[in-house]
Amino acid sequence: MKLSFALVCLSFVVAAGCGGDAPKSAAPAAAAPGLAKLTLAAKPAGAVSVQDARKAGAADSRTVTGRIANVVPGFAVFTLMDSSLPYCGEKNKEDGCKTPWDYCCESAETRTANSLLVEVRDAKGKPIAGSLGDLRLLDAVTVVGKLTKDEHGNHVLLATGWHRDARPELPADLRWPN
Image (cartoon, rainbow, N blue to C red; front, side):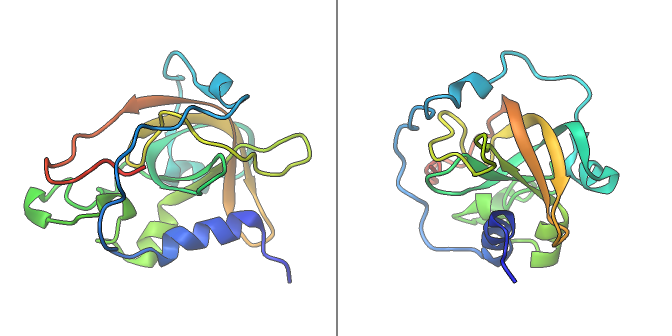
């Protein structure tokens, strides 16, 4: 049985645990050609949470809000985590987690139940290679797109646009993840 790209990508989030050092900080890469046009000037109205989007199921048009929890290197693909699930150290500032963006404080089941894969695909249905530009891990974003559910039960939001709503401040001893 072939696994979909979405299932493989989602498995990275589920398998993630508190991991070593923070990635080295660098200036965000410019968005890949064609991806810059997906940045929306204003936050779209009518957004629902990741959990509510998953419960509602597939839809031709869905607006979902959450936090970026994982970015697939080299592709316009990321995991959107429900905003109700605090990232490590968000509520407990003394947590000391050096990788708050991986949500390692939560069980794999909780992370899976609160996440949604977001992809930008080309005309042939393949994920587009490239950088997400200024989007970073833990950014609060609102994404517009078509919500699908594959034969394995994985929810995938095929993005047609997004708006960065907020960027949290991390403790001074942590570098922003890339």
